[in-house]
Image (cartoon, rainbow, N blue to C red):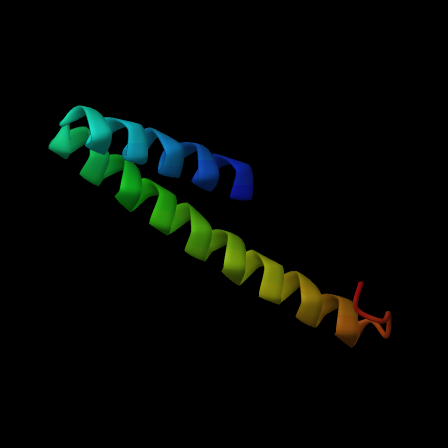
Length: 57
């Protein structure tokens, strides 16, 4: 999921450099949403791992 967020970030940067404001804004928004979803899932996974008694990676 982090890979997809980075992909949309790159698309946003390229679109912004070429002057496509709408596409750049949409791609940046998607990248931001995916990044926050990744962070939430990562934290949940670490909490679940700690609850099971396994040390963090």
